[in-house]
Amino acid sequence: MEETIEVGLDGRTVAVPREVVNSIAAAAAGRAGVSERHRDLSLRLNRALGSGHVTLGQAEIRALVAVLDEAHPERFGPAAAELRRAVA
Image (cartoon, rainbow, N blue to C red; front, side, top):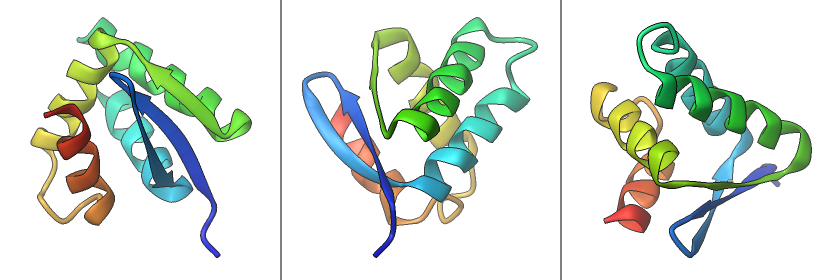
């Protein structure tokens, strides 16, 4: 069974595969030099890889949406669609 990270988004929790969380954190880190929100998202997601869960605030959710929107639609797989639905 695939290990997941529980991501809290605006009162809703989504189980996201660990490798997807890692990929999103890396993508956010790539923009950390120009965006404080992206930096914070990357840091929070990296901590979640250790703890197994994270609750994102509104700023991190906006950065998450930006990362998902910036990526090729298939990059993060079905987990990305579920994350987008959770914050819609």
